[in-house]
Image 1 (tube, helix red, strand yellow):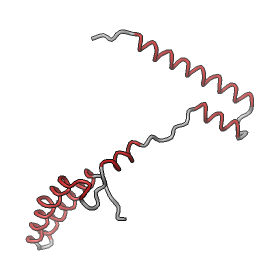
Image 2 (cartoon, helix red, strand yellow):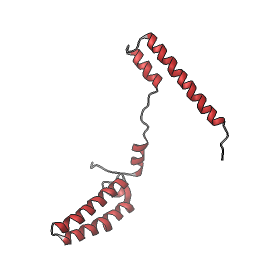
Image 3 (spheres, one colour):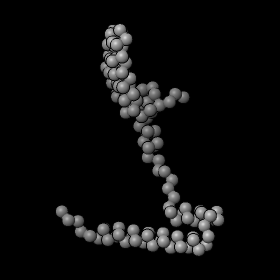
Image 4 (cartoon, helix red, strand yellow):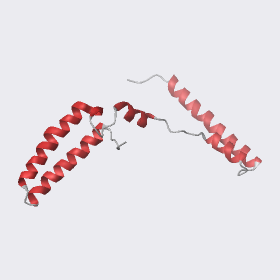
Length: 124
């Protein structure tokens, strides 16, 4: 299966390549090829990418693109990381209890700040 790109990225690649080749060909002494490249790239390929979208070869569907970008990265809370380190024996009992207490205090403080902000009326 050939690699695919989201529609915007593929259109950007086509535009940059078309512009670059259109500028390069006259320098190389091929002005007719420059005109053909500009017409093919800007007046044929880019509109087709816009119209056909995912049906155009090398362009991935919007659903695939959105699914890839919206996958939540697994996040682990600081408390879970501390528990894992304690379970592996990297942290002593006293150190675990001290750090856990500090983390719980900061979570309580953060929750209090959020609650206080929610209770305040907005000034407009």
